[in-house]
Length: 123
Image 1 (tube, rainbow, N blue to C red):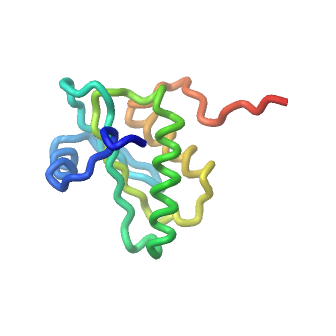
Image 2: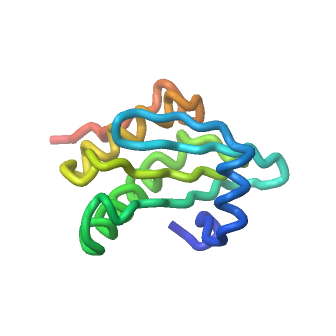
């Protein structure tokens, strides 16, 4: 993910928390804040120390970033997203993380309903 796709500053996180809509499933909470003046979407990640050590948290963040990168064509632009990982994510592999993240983004109505989560394998 490029730098312009990231939320880094605390004020920006707080704005999404205060004014954004939240949607959740067992693994993720997603806050979405619509920003009309913004052409692209931005992502902020939060993975608590309760989930695991630094290695585990960084791996989860890599999984989430890669999942969002693969779903970027189906994701609504002009929004800020803050994704909070919950404890069950620690026991999941990349494909489970991607599937769960797609599920919560569809619940939030920001990922196209018919967007394919898994790419078809070609023989």
